[in-house]
Length: 325
Image 1 (cartoon, helix red, strand yellow):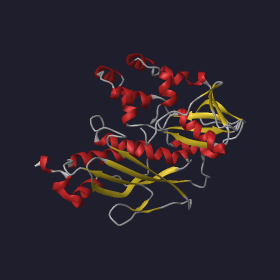
Image 2 (tube, rainbow, N blue to C red):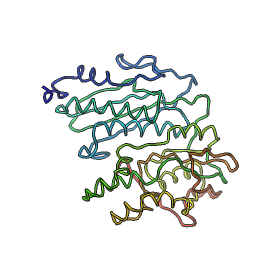
Image 3 (tube, rainbow, N blue to C red):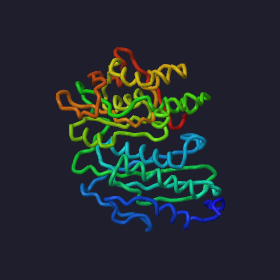
Image 4 (cartoon, rainbow, N blue to C red):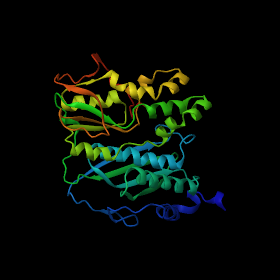
């Protein structure tokens, strides 16, 4: 019977068989799931690699995140890091630990979310392996790989004085969605389900990473912890000061105004300090043609004091902290 189809009753082999059978096959996998390790092609001869974890109660709550949501988000957060290096996502390995009484349907839903994330964000890439284990709470760990396709990686440390600061993707929407989920105003969650959706299933602009690389971006990263905090990472790594134009953020704030009014907060805080949009923040040499996916929001100043300024005022590097929460 369906209610007996828990991971504990089915066991590892059958649970994996049912889950792996749902995963899509990618164009870079030579040997996929089923052996001790996968074999993945890398025409460039180099590849980028990143890893991330998601822990129940710290990074998400099952009361509002489905298995599908978590599968999608696991893909989004990791391929965004690959894109931030100027590479194309090719393959991922996914390890997940679950309580034994978890229904197999939840794990199958998670696999469907992985597939949807790959299809929408990184077509051609695939999950090529991973692990399934028992734990008292849900723990997800993903490692993603990307192909540089002959290009140099874009690091955080390359920003130069005079560069234009630009962002691709959304700012503040995921933070607004999280605050709506945490709110006791159920009507507000339904009224702004587009913001909630960005929190549960982020939509980072993955192709923009390679486009930025080809446009000679000097520095780039994934805005996972908030614009202010991640801009400060570029400033520190590059030994420069970054100045953000306050007026350039007004468009990002405008789409959040109604939700902010409902929750009695200011949309500026979501835009500056909210994380998990997984936008791409990059710097470009002045005079180059910046890809249309990127919106200029500031510039790099010659000062070496590693500050982030909002117009002329110092902006504190506040945002999400993966240890402190």
